[in-house]
Image 1 (cartoon, rainbow, N blue to C red):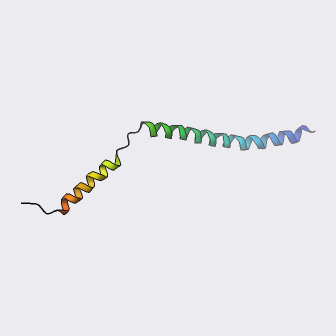
Image 2 (cartoon, helix red, strand yellow):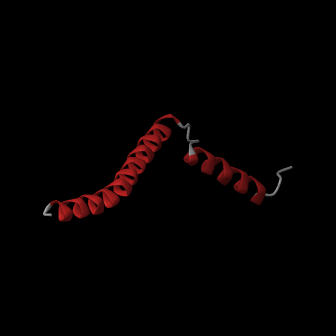
Length: 66
């Protein structure tokens, strides 16, 4: 008769534990994929592109010299 409460407690724990396990597993795999992409994805040099844009804008502002 005393094993009844244990069965109920075990069922409630396993019904909570499985989604948390999947949540943790997804979070961990997401972090691993993110770190892999951060290391191997070629990010363009934004500072260099910004300098090129500034030069283009400055060149358009100046009148042509004859």
